[in-house]
Length: 65
Image (cartoon, rainbow, N blue to C red):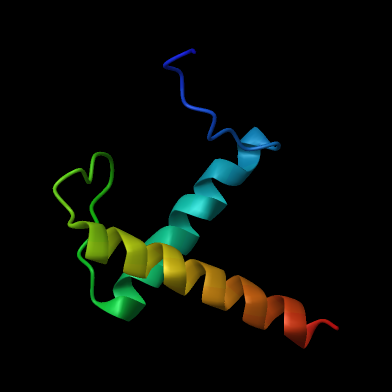
């Protein structure tokens, strides 16, 4: 099994938009993210950022139905 990450965006130009989205979600849940490495975050903090991102994506999708 390869040790390379499989977290690749289909559209490389979307990286900046996803990073901005992640920073906004972190701010909303009170997690202090910094540019670059954030390996010092707890699992709870990282999960809350991801959860907030999913919540916002679902809300946007439902709004466009």
